[in-house]
Image (spheres, rainbow, N blue to C red):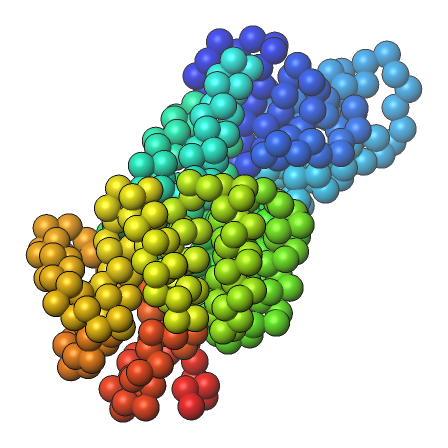
Length: 446
């Protein structure tokens, strides 16, 4: 055990941090994240005395002198204050994480404590909010800016568990959503997400954001739908009003073919965050998965009215037009997504698929060749190349790229059963074997 360390000025306007909690001296409040926890005045004063003596035994006489000076004290006053304190902290007297009872000697605060000044807390919180601001944009550059901001928040000692959860989100986005706009190889980014999740939950096992990220990694990289469902259920039980958690859970349901319940969850997420570009876009994506192309197009247009420069919305609108046979409209939207994403690989692959289906095979093959050359220099998601080959009726080459996608554990493979581009090979035995390797749809392949 250790006493509080003076990492800041230690002025009375500051406070103490331990685990996921912060004792704010200026507000006389106990906070978890940004939520103030209910705590009586005497329980607050008791906690303050224990923290000021962290690692040391505090006897009952000391507590009576500091907390109940010149006040009539009932026999069980200290015990009641300790009980209220443990309830607020979620602590257990039999297996304490914070307040230990020393039989015959009083109590001891056993968790590591850091002293912070209010200015540090405020600065760190601004970095945390800056990280969330960048995450909402979901571009490669913004994901990297978000990671840097979260790291600054951690260094300042503010929102530490939540900041690790944000870092995990950023790496998930780099591995999946940001593929349309660039992104990193799954083998690079998902292990980093796992490490950040572990740090977040070690600090506070009730951080909903960390469980949401865990659910995404479990599905998109580990291909373990049971673990993903458990993580998402835990996240939603901790924070039922978290739009990002419902959004992620909804996508998982959609990939598994549960379209109606997936749409209900996404609409719930949209009610919670009606202006979110990604939630608006992915409501349209769910309609696309369910082959409701006109509904998907209408939703993507609604999204683009709110966010006209959001590349993902243009990209997914293009996919809907392509599947509905509207090649010119699809080509226009793929070009918009390509321009807004500064030439990211998948919008280029989308143009190649449309060209192939329109009979412009030479142009499609030229784009495929350019992407294959690019794949030797940087990460290009293998399924995107496979889909061009399938559009060119080169199924053997398409399955070679899909085998490579298995090796790289591409998150795009979780959409195999809801992606219309694979309709041309659903009767091919190699496609059944591909589904078995990913393993999400046991008993659903046929």
